[in-house]
Image (tube, rainbow, N blue to C red):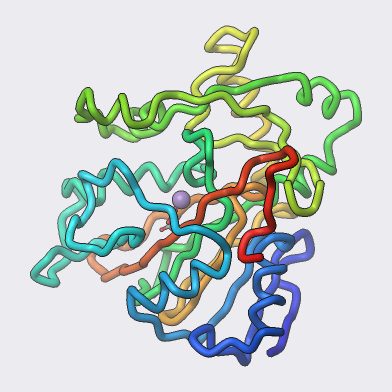
Length: 291
Ligand code: OGA
Ligand code: MN
């Protein structure tokens, strides 16, 4: 197994490994990387849905989407397909529900930040990739936090944000939710500055799901989120990945934001995503995922 740096601020690339037959030492090193590096790129893999679920579960308990109406319900629980291909294998038009829903992925976000239990790692596996565009970008919200002036760190450390999945989906033009959808994922508060349960490092928890900040008007909250997001998306904090089929990227939603970039709609892009539960943003109940 060969481990190299992916980006000066964060991330690792792990090569010469087969995630379907990990030794104990390799498994431990990948779990550690997934909990400390922000993102981990593992190229050259070949995974069935079940094999991806098996690999995902080394990090923790598999997360199952509760509101999954817009996606292909034929997938096994825990598998989210991010693709522009319909059941007959044809490219779907951009007006398709599945694609409209995925448009939300194009705004910076942290997966499941609209839930109290949040996510720890997410794992995206590329089956088919486009030749141009369709990258996924990650921003290190730890590196960005570290670079803030102390006075700003102190001020932001006092703030609590509300995360609401409908806020972000409505912004991306997806409004047809049911009463039941609203009941399943009501808005939740999170501190704006979070502490990583494994490393103890601080980061900014932002993203498109943020709908309000305590003590601020809507306009003030929006302006602050926009300002901080611009700070985080500076090139020194961002890694952009152009996908090759067989790529796996494991990322830590507790220390990164991510977004998808526009892809040529006439080319096939087929990705499969899984995620695990976070054991808790902070506090004594925390277990290291996979341990
Ligand atoms: C995701 C996501 C972006 C992309 O899978 O969680 O945000 O580039 N994907 O597909
Ligand atoms: Mn996502």
